[in-house]
Amino acid sequence: MSMKTNDNSQLNKRMQEIDAGIPEKRISIDYSTLEESVSKWLLLKDKNVLRILMATVIANKLQGDPVWLLIVCASGGSKTELLRGLNKIPNIYNLSDLTPQTFLSGMKGENASLLSRIDPDNTIMVMKDFTTVLTMHRDKRQEILGQLREIYDGYIKKAFGTGETKEWHGKLGFIAGVTTVIDRYQTISQVLGERFIQYHLVHDNALVLARKSMSNSGDEKQMREEIQESFANFIAGIQIPEKNPDVSGTVKEKIIHLATFCVRARSGVFREGYSRDIEFVPDPELPTRFTKELAKITSALSLIDGRSDEENYNLVFKIGLDSIPQIRRNIISKFRFDDEYETSTVASMIGYTLTPARRALEELEAFGLVKRRRTGKGLTDLWSFSEEAIKLLTIALPDGEKTKRLTVPDPSGDGFDEAAKFFEEAEQETLPDLS
Image: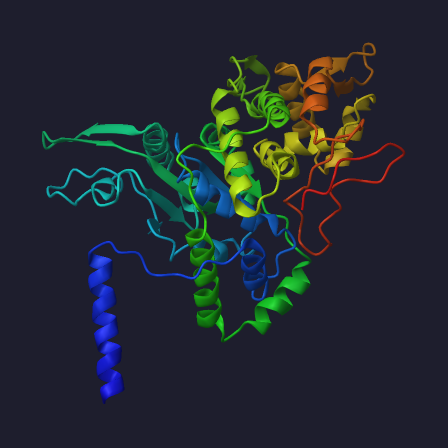
């Protein structure tokens, strides 16, 4: 009886502390302990996803604009459990779905709008499945995406038919999971890409994943509790500096060139509705915002376990390339710096038919990253990297790597084969393993 009374007393005390905003006392752990704890339950071929998740949480606690992250992975690829693992970190707000009325509502009442109920300067919103937004009706989707752009920039104002106007100022972090279907919505992907960084999770053999999932059956509650405790304990041990950690000069220069290449490679064109010919090439996205996002993630990574900016840059490099739409990224991954390719060869290399392969090549050409050599009437075109692309990538490559071929992982595999090695062995040196 006395034990039960004591338990109730402790519970009531903790509830009062929560109401008063007093954080739960925690015993901090280092990154290796965090990785070991999560790996006990989840089979992660790509353990860097833990590093990028923690870096994003940390980045949103640093000074400056927020960092928004999309974890891209096939359904059942552990992203939901990873995002659920953030639940016990202070100021995490879980969001199940989004409607145009979620952030600012025309309903009366001080707390009718979500943005009025959360800390305006210290909240990170977590949404386990952003795919539901991509697949909703176009008008609703566009309204939500428009609101997200304004929220990222720190201010949104909305007038309602009731005559009421609501506004919000603040800084909101955002972390969400999404399936690889995002690459199907290329226009939306480009809109999101302006404010979200993306990380494509490389999964393990599907049969191995299925066996691991079966071994956890019945222990899900314990698994989630341990993962959540580990994430929260790790973040509790991070000392957030008053001034953001400086990024080394060498890595800054690499980030500038990487961001410049990536924003061009992901920029969109307008095609004629019937012929699908390119009818307008807008100015490409400028790299200013993406450069800042990559630099801030680099600063945050340096606080995780003391690795240097140069060591962390491999991960930053992957994040940059993951922002490029899949089909274009696949083409970039197959091209050697000094080779030319027929359209049919490119299509075969990336596993697409001629038409989508040609369109992707045309789009990369439109932004000056690929050049086309016409070999004569009735003959196939030859495609290669442009001089500008080679210049940007040569500087953007991680240190110590001299390559004539850039290779990146393809996150869209069917899952039954082992995830391909990121970098093929060839006569010349290749890029480092980013997994």
